[in-house]
Amino acid sequence: MPWSAVRWATPSARLAPPVAALLLAPLVAAPLASCTSAPSESAGIGASVPAAPAQAPARDAGGLVAMVDGKAIDFAALRPALVELAGQTALRDAVVDRRLAARLRGAGITVTDERIERERALLLETLSPDAERARELLLGIRARQGLGESRFRALLARNAGLRALVEREVRLDDEGIANAFDVLHGPKRTARIAVVASLADAERLIADRAARPFADLAVERSLDESAARGGLLAPMARRDPSYPEPLRAAIYATAVGATSAPILDGARYYVVEVLGESPADGTTPEAARAACERLLRLARERLLMDALARDLGALEGVTVFDRAFDPPAGG
Picture (cartoon, rainbow, N blue to C red):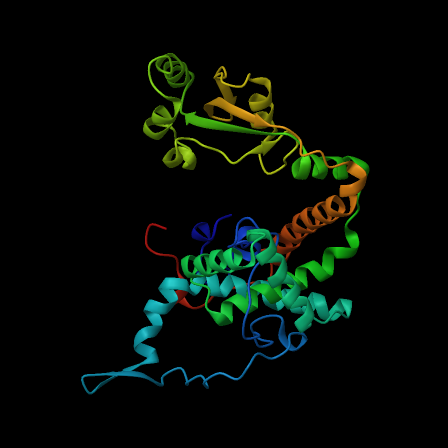
């Protein structure tokens, strides 16, 4: 149930479960996320997270925030706007953090500085192999997500706690390692995709392809977010689990340079144009085994972390009383 669908502000109203991506991946490509001043026990990981460097003391709820032309603005005046901007996000994070802290205490696990820094390093590594580029990308993501120092550290600590709870459950197998090898070192195909609403639209796009570039048609007609790039997808391995199996199958069943037949995907259709294929890089499975095992472990940890985050964000046991946290009208 989305947060916007929850009935609020009565004793029986309850919080909806947080979306796992909000907890784990404001940094989409990574199996992790966030960092800075440690949350208090009332807000999250609690005493299990080392304290952050000292910051300016917080003012009381009605304290002075600023002076404008000699007139005061206090926190009470800003509170409605602040809650409207991010209140629901902050509240659901607090719910998950409170439950996560309890789960960690029960397991006898402490989220140390080392665990938090490992999350930061994993995130940077996932964003780019070039350290400087990774830092630039992270700064951009944090700016877009509004992740200041406090929320960023809290997010890293949250991921560290989730990972600590699930890491012993991960199991590696030969099939998974083979899939990881294909993603890392196997052949890759580059393709464009156009997603349309009906079979007639898909057939019309294929017919028009004879006279116009696929990229132009994708920009004009595709419903997919890739439309702005002319439908261009990142190079894709045959076993890459980050793409749906029907899409991978279509791209690898279509000849290079050709356009596929319409493919039904739920209520929509898509058409792909295969641009080219790069060969495997020549690495042997034996030489790559350690890297493949690591990739597989991180991927499976992420799945377990997602599931645990959903469990910690369950509706039961949470009641919202403050009407300021109501979703916007019509939301």
